[in-house]
Image (tube, rainbow, N blue to C red):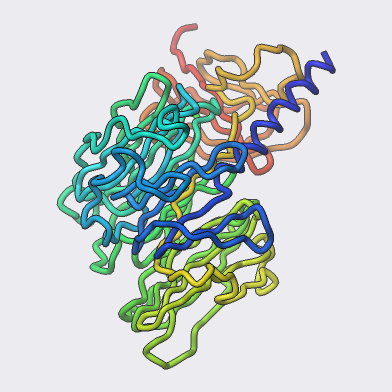
Amino acid sequence: MRSKFFLLLLVLMHQQVFSQNRAINWAFGDSAGLNFATEPPTPFLSSIKTFEPSATISDEAGNLLFYTNGKTIWNKEHEVMVNGNFLDIGAGTLSTYTQGVIIIPDPSDNLKYYIFHMDFNYIKYTIVDMNFEDGLGLVTSKNNILLEIPGMTEKMQAIRHANGRDWWLVILALPEDGISGLPFNFYEFLITPEGISEPAIREGAIYEDQSSSENIGQMKFNQQGNMLACTNGRNVILYHFDRCSGFFNYLSIIDTIFEGSIGDELYGIEFSPSGSLLFLNKVGAFGKPILYQYCLDSGDIEDSKQIIYLDLNDDTDNNIMGSLQLAINNKIYLAMPGIYDTSFYLSVINNPDVFGNGCNFDTLSVFTGGKVITNSLPNMPNYNLGVMPKSACDTLSTSIENISESTFAIYPNPAQNSIYIKSTIPGSAPFILMDVFGKEVMHTEVLFNYPINISHLPQGIYIAMLKHGEDWVTEKLIKTNEK
């Protein structure tokens, strides 16, 4: 059995290391490109032209496959892919959709890819097949309408399902007609070998009319896949996310940032590699660009605020702050284009897991080979994220049994009045119980091997979440009234 365990471990390590290479190349801005196989990253000449939306994908060996601005797709030779032009993305090449395009591998075929792109209130998709044109790729279908989404913002992200194969596509929308006091809506699509599912609509935090560019800016998952952060013009909202069920659970809001000046809106956001720190910036157009850091492990997240960079330059040609993006070298890069002048450099947070100024922020220090920086950095999901161990929906993992005894278990299941969290270790842990609609019905700290009262809950299926270290272990619970 031990030999089987090490064989499985090697397989999982191989998958994670080589999936990481899918994000090794970036194409962005005006003809800019960076390859992260070297330190510092090596510039290359791309064919892309974009103000904001962009996405790039490489194969598992790190070879560039293609990239896009949502309007045109270029192959690895930097030529327009066959049938890869005239994609629909709002204003086209000049589109200002922050995260208006993203690339997701097809779970049924590792040589096929979905490109999802925003076109006003429509989300559309295009399919690329790398089996054709001697490996240069062919667009086999394009501009397919997936759904009309009223109030769709510019925020689109993707995260692997807990089974390690499928993908969640997540799009944030304002309440219909932008009515204040109603919740944001998350539109979720599950991408499986069978295709793209009908959307699930999950309610987010309550929307408050801000009249301050709440549509723009980034939305990011952390690398662990259990937390989502959304910029909202004047504030940032944090959610727990369950990769198994697709449920969101409101965590916190950071709302003491906006000071009411023009250009004071939030735009870029990114988690540190460990997920313990959060970076975000203000655009700074006609204002002052600022880079903030917050500690998510703090008892008071807002109070943990650190100002990492503040531009005190009074000149009108100062740089603004655009996208933040974590690279495979565990550094976070920041696009800082000039307002009236051009910039050929990215800024970088060299040690993003270090709290305070020890994170070592370098302004305009990463050369792009003389190519112009815009607000754009590639919209990259975490291609490296794999199976979530011991989750309720880990149905695709190896058939090797009894690799180890489960650390936690809920019993009895089904249950009528009480449940217990059985554990081989003493102590306690945060515990969340949600119904099938994603509504939180219990949030508490539980003692292992002690009863938890559920007699007040109606019968049905629930999702139980228990925090274990930095992760959340998920299990299905059936509540019954039968004795």
